[in-house]
Every structure is written in C-alpha cells, then in structure tokens.
Length: 440
Image (tube, rainbow, N blue to C red; front, side, top):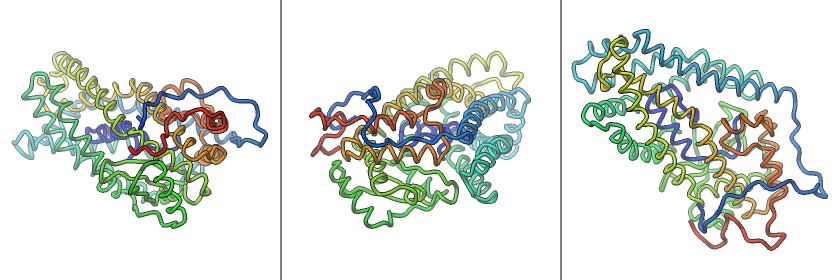
C-alpha cells in the first residue's frame, strides 16, 4: 500500500499522493505549536566519551542497496514505456471497444474500461513486481511470506484499485467532457477525494491487507500514553499490526485524520527494539501529529497535484491532436485517453520526486528533533536507527544522487549523528520543535 504510482491507476495515484502528503515512517526504505524553523544537521561533534552506535556495513547491505536503487528506476521506466505501448499498439482502443460492447452508457463504459486496463496493467507489471517485491526480499532474508500470500495481496490491491479507481476515472472523464479548463475541475474534485481517502485509510483500506489491534504490551502502552500526555496529545490511539506475515523489516507510522488518526507499530519493531528505543520512535511519530505534518503534507501534495493537472491538460490536448487518431481517439474525454493522462501525471510526479522527498525529509528532521527534545533519549534514538539500517539492509550513507532523488527521510547515518550531537538542553538553549504544556 505504500508504493508510489502503483499499478498506474488514478486510485493508486491518489493513494500514493496521500502517502507523500503524510510522511509517516520512522525509517527510509532504500508545524509546530510554536513556529519552528528547519533544524540543519549539525557538524559532528568530537567523539563522545562513550562508544557511539555504529552501523555494520556489509557487502550484502551494499548489494541490496544497489539492487533496490536500480529496480526503483527500472520500475519507473518500465511503467512509462508500458503506458506508451498500451497507446501506440492500440491496446487502449481495443479495451475501450470491448467495454462499449458491454454497455452503451458513457459513464459505465469508462468504469468497465478502467477495470480492464487495471487488470491488463497488473498482468504486464507482475513479473517485475514479483522480482522486486518477492524475490529480492527473500534473497536478502527480509521476508518469509509465501508466494500464495504475496499473490493474494497483489490481487486485493488490484481489486481495490478497480473499486476506487473506476468511479473516479468515470467522474474525471465527465469533468473533461463538460469543462473547458478541466485541469481545474479535476483538481477541485481531487481535494475531497484525497481528504476522504486519508480519513478512511486506517479503518477501511489498511485492514484489507493486515489485522490491526490496540497495543497489547500494557507496560509499553502505559509508557507511551504518559509520553503522549507530555507531548500534548490526549486520548492517543496506538495500534500494532501483523506485518510480520509480509516482512521482517521494522516500521512505525502515523496516519488518518480526526477520529481515524492513529499511531501504528509493526509487530516486528515491537519484538526487536527495547522500550527506550520504542519510546524514541513513538515520540517521533507523535511529533508528526503535534507539528501537523499530515495537514501540511496534504496541502503541499495538493499544490503539486494542481501543477500536475494543469500540465496534463496542455500535453494531453496537444498529444490528442497530433497522435490521437492513430491511437484510436480524437477527444480528451474518450476512455482510451486515460493511459495518456496517467503517463503524463506519472512522469510529472517521478520528475518531481526530489521536491516531494525534500519536503518529506524536512518533516522527518523536525520529528526527530521533537522526539529528542521530548525524551532526551539520544543514545536510544541512535541505537534505533542502527537497528533500522542493519535490519533493512539499508546503507547509512547512500550516494548523494540517490539521497536527493529517492530518500523521503534523512539518511540513517545523518540521523545517528544527529541523535548523538543534538542536546540543546545541556547548553541552556531553547527547544526548536517541542513546547512543553502546549497542545496541538
């Protein structure tokens, strides 16, 4: 559920934007109560008197990082080529004609077309998805999920994309047909859709793949509720999820809005970290809540989407005039144009990845600062990041280009140094993110 541009469908695009708008995890795969400026990573201080935690970088870790980075770009390129091929080879036209034989109603034609397109795209991307998300994790000991379970998750993802995406695609084409500046109509329509998806995600979408339940460790639960009270969060909801059936890696995140907002811990992180490390990680997630990162990220994502839709109309209208007839359509509201619309938007968000990830790194650094100021668990935080790196086989210091393009979180090496050196309370300096006694 967290892959951007997954399955190249509108529903997946919106869900991916929701993810981008809610920087939530405490690790990297390879606004505050009072105004807080971004806290630049300080220059490493002289060696501390105690032995600082250090990531053990192995050849296996390097090989995994190279492979994951390569597959990221290969997957994007393959998706773009595939969408272009669906247009150029007449597949989109044939799927539309097949949908039109089922019904004569334009709205329903689009929904049927969407279901067919989603099934075709899922089938064509399945080999690469299988290698990237099943073979590779198993090769590096990061998962022991059976093939049947993995395929069932893919099937559920496809069905979810159809159920959500079909009516959205039909509504989008209706807007394109009726409104001259359809880019603005699509954007205005996307605002309530994105808010709704964020709202229902924790209680409707996520449980399709996993089982969520209140945190079972009562001692840890009490510690976290006390921590939440200090952070200014009342009635905090902390859940655990059975991610161990899919992965051996660790994570925690915050999602939802209002009554559905919750902090979620994977069962893997609960089993692998001690209570101090978990308190640091959870304080980081509480920082996202207190600093309103979901709302800020949503606003940022909607701004990016506005640009994407404007650019989409310029390019889709021009491409339709130039190549539309050979591709099987002559107007932008033809269902067969949807792969072209998806191609333009997908390329835009891929190219904009450094911008979106830069904003996410800013939020993540603020949350790290909040956690350190709330807990003073510097050593526990550093240990937690070491465990994240070694457990997920992620390099703590990736190449600069990979960091710039891919990383939605600061590299773990930087975060370890920051944990070891950021201690303003020892110098009598004010906090940058956490304000005691102030509620969000």
